[in-house]
Length: 510
Image (cartoon, rainbow, N blue to C red; front, side, top):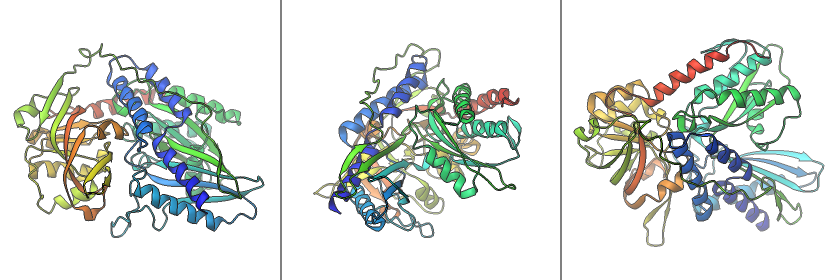
């Protein structure tokens, strides 16, 4: 039992902190395709640096360590209850040591269990097979990309693409639309698993199962192999790019599976995964529980960490501005979309629970002229009771759209940091009250953690570590203005241009 638990703990740690070789190759290839000095190229350089830092620090690549989902195959006669117990014990230990963020939340009360254990978490799928070894695969799929999963029921009408029928061409349109609707909110450039057929439940399960395939494999079904190649080529012509900043790399992998369906139902289910594609697997000795080999470590792949040249700064209208709270309205009004902002001083984290609370309550700190960071960090206490940041990248901001405009007005906030952009309501508030939205690089949790010099304090710890309001002192925290106080939004511009490009692929292909 102890060997088994330690093997699973090693699997969890490696999955959280060490990007697999096939994913590294895909990210390196994307970096090579981008024009030097563009926002996309600079983002991919940051991503590569973050991957290296996570491996060296043995710390989470992304602060959102997601919903641990295990696929376990066991020989006949192996006690699956023992494996389930070992998995749960390893999950608790990994959470305690900061390899996983406490992510298991009661759906009715909002209470965080604190150890990633609760009804439905972690997710464990068992299957028997005739081999002698135990196989355990794990994927850590964060909430940002999980929220961009989508399911279609054919036939249907799709924005930009028209009618999608009950055939392979209808499937093609659904997949392209799935990539389009994700924009930068799922931390593009991403990977997708697609399930054709099944029912509502099995279709999504099939889609997620595709994400366990190696990035560079070839589908044994020739029709699906052709469709995968087509999607990869076409999706990267949409111009959504890394983080939704525009660019040449929008999709890094596409894997498609198919199951039979009922005559009355035709579902196409798409599981979207961010660039921080954290999945790994091991083969275990069924008697000792020890690791025999890893499944996704064919070779050692180094990240391309050569800096992205800044040759195109003038073309993109980019300049660099240093800000420290409290920020004046005059400083904010001088900023334009494309500017790089370097933040020193104090900022405060705030996610869903805090935004909801602040709508009807006062804030324990003065936010006038201040900075809110959409972030749920991984935090650990030392032996002296002091908190330390282990991982701290941005979360997807669009979830705060119902609140953000009112919060900006009520508390005089000058800057909101997150990823993926926000909507028309927030854009209007930025214009009316003199504030900006700053896009940080999603998933770059080690890169940003290094900028966080000190934890000044915390409020609302009862919300759970991810949802608490952390008061952080930062130095050299870089982000890009993507929504300014003059009514301009890079996210809206990219969405509009990508929709126009999507419409070019409306005519039948298959």
